[in-house]
Amino acid sequence: MQKRSRDDGRSLLDFIDCIDVACPRCGHHALVRMERRQGTGIVTSPPARLSCHHCGLIRTQRRDKTSMWRYSLRADGRDPYFGIQLWLQEPTRHGLVFAYNEAHLQVLETFVGAELRERNASRAIRWNNRSMASRLPRWMKRAQNRDEMLATLARLRARLKTAQP
Image 1: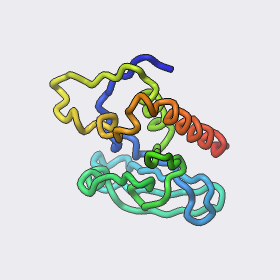
Image 2: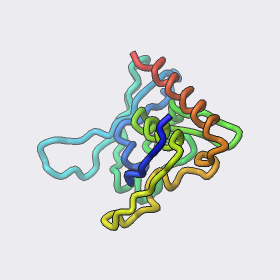
Image 3: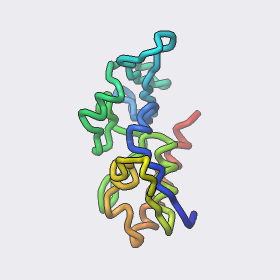
Image 4: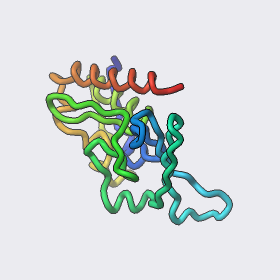
């Protein structure tokens, strides 16, 4: 367990470029990726693409990061592009614990496992309360729930490892 965690100011928006989901057709592990078009210099509306390597399902939807911010990200265990159930989610007695991908899961493990959690005191970052760490539910941050939350996050990590080829 790490002793210290510093909030780097990242929000949930920083983790939506590649999201692990459950395929709506077969229920196996699938990915939702936000594709970027090269060559034009300006990306107006990059499509999000759902792809399942198990059954071959492919879907495309057009939304960009700014529309995700305007309409708010989902906190109900579904991805913000298609509304599909996340692969990395588990209910607890306190509420739903979810992660969009491995990077998001790593940040959660570091933050929840730390005994000392520091906020970024830089004045250059104006939206201190918009970070993912500051928006976590109180029950997830409580020291008395730390062991239960770390066990839940470990189960999510094991689920991710079994899904990867």
